[in-house]
Length: 183
Image (tube, rainbow, N blue to C red):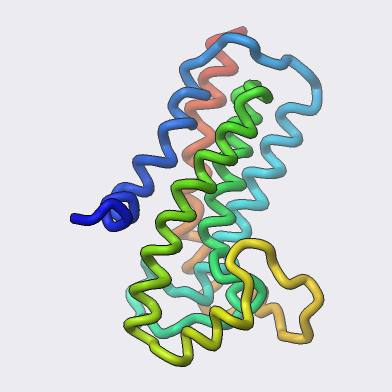
């Protein structure tokens, strides 16, 4: 198994490492009023981005996969991973380790950069010229805000996507317990 393939296969475990550290580390915490509102906001934006993307991607919905270019995929190529990064940043903020937020960001971004390169090779083989054209038109990480394309915020897969992505909210439980234990 190649390095990029290994990173792709274990991406979920790899991005969990900073979250585990943030959960068990109690040193140099920042106890400020804005921590929870900021952390929950970043976390929920990440979850909502995943719900929006899930409706169009249909991953884990048991539907035949096609090249996805609608919804958030018309603005950037990796909205699910961007959502994951926001979820990780939100959890790190909630852990009150503000000094660790940039480390979490760069670590997660690095892991997902490897994953994206691996996926792009696969998608280029699978979809050929249409994916090559999509790659040329849609940015990898920073969304094209000014676009005349419809955003497709809600479609027929909205409720299914909410149910599937709602499990992300369980990630907050250990951080809530950490806060309770500290008190």
